[in-house]
Length: 142
Image (cartoon, rainbow, N blue to C red; front, side):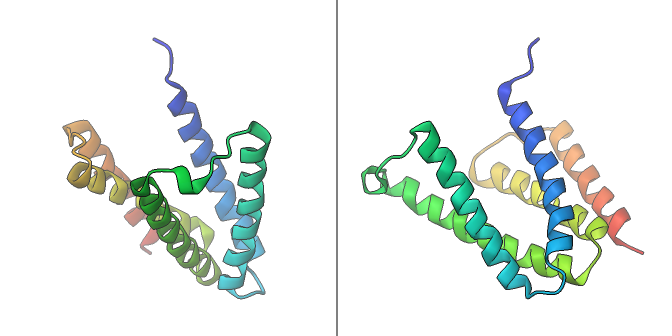
């Protein structure tokens, strides 16, 4: 059975998130964490803008459905809040403890998907989520 394409992207996301912790911890030393987040955001804007431009994927935002725009704005606000918290946490704590706690976002996403998207909360998924919580607690607690 072939592996679905989304799995490769998810693995890539996890790998780059790991690099984010490493590079972020080094980069945030000696500067304000909010400034670090701002500078990171500029780079993300330029990088993703280049991909959109290079692939010809640009669409006029005013022509997109309002529901799409509203939820993209909400997602962007949540991302910004997450990044601000993440960089401050990296500034104050060890990356090896901050990153696993940050990954509890996976569990929050699962619970929210069960509640708001009607995704199935089967035993395997819930058990995996609980293992993520347990792992984060084991790593984070002294």
